[in-house]
Each structure stands twice: as C-alpha cells, then as structure tokens.
Length: 220
Image (tube, rainbow, N blue to C red; front, side, top):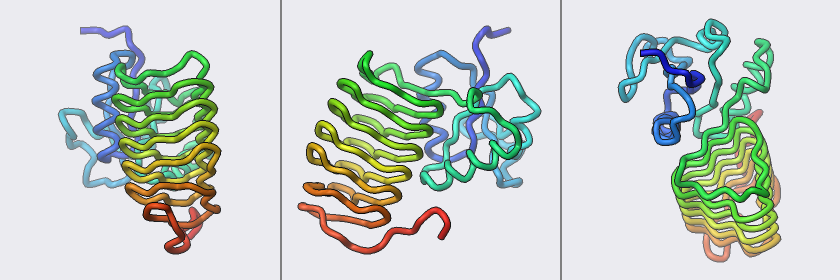
C-alpha cells in the first residue's frame, strides 16, 4: 500500500521518541519510517513495532524523510542538531509534531523541530524556538517565550509573559509566575513554584523555588 504522506525519522530511540511516534500516529500528517540511534546494538531491532534503521547515516540515505530530534535532554538535542548541520542536513528537513488534542492559538509562532504532546495549550502570541519539547497538559499563556532546546514536562503552567531560556528544563507540575524568566540551561524542579527569575545555569526547587546548586552546562 502506497502512502502519500511524507516519511519522518525519529532520532534517538528514546522514551520521548516513542511518545512522539504516538503523536505522529494520532495526527496522521506523516508516515513513520522508524528510528535512528547511535547504539549499534539497536540497529535492525524494533521499538513499538517500528524499525531502528541504523545510525545517523541512515538519515542521509533517506533524503526525502523529515526529521525529529527525540533525546529527552535539551543538550542532547542541541548536540545532534550540530552534528546533523555539520553533515549537511538543512534546517527545512526538521518536522514539527503537534498532537491533535493540543490547542494552539493562531497567533502562536512555532519553530522547526518542536514536539507538542497531548493536551498542550498555547493561548495567545506564544513563541517557541527550535527543538522545544512540551509534555502533556502543559499550559503556556499570553506572550510566553520558550527558547531553543528547552523542555517543559507534564502539567507545567507558565503565566503571561514568562520566558524559558535555551535548554532549560521545567519539571512536571511546576508553576512560573507572570513575567518570570527561567534562565538558559537551568532546571526548575518538579512541583516548584518560581516567583522570581532563575539565573542561567542553576537548579531551583521548592515552593517558593530557591537555589539548590549549579546546573551542568552543555559543554560540561
């Protein structure tokens, strides 16, 4: 049976990749070609019924396929994006995956490579950078900005005009006050309540959120 849908390859056979595959199935806009992964022991196997096609070279062997970066950590998505750029993979090959139950405002701006899972809400004039991952039932309200490679876990809520910096990780159930910034490559812990800005490269936890320790940076 021949499908007229574009093929899509999920990079890294991870838990996030499996969730993304389910969103692709639900949305129906792409035909899943399978996964690629750096671990050669996975090559030729299947994950949830989809083949692991090989390593990154399998992307070059399928030039018509779109790509989604699926490692959980933002630093890993960033590293893969740099590797693929060095291999000549153009930006326009990245697909954006939006689960059909997500509510995305017409004024939202979503950059290539983003993944929005079930129940995500973007209310008005929300801007997402490249390769942002937003887990189920997370709500972003008016004028929020989420920069490249950030990860927002399940049931996060950002009040208006909040900002999440590049590569930041916002844990499940965390709340961010209006106008507050979560700094680049910082972590806001599960269930934390951010009432003031979190500087770059720090881990904050608790209610109200407070400094715990320095965060590992992408080059560390």
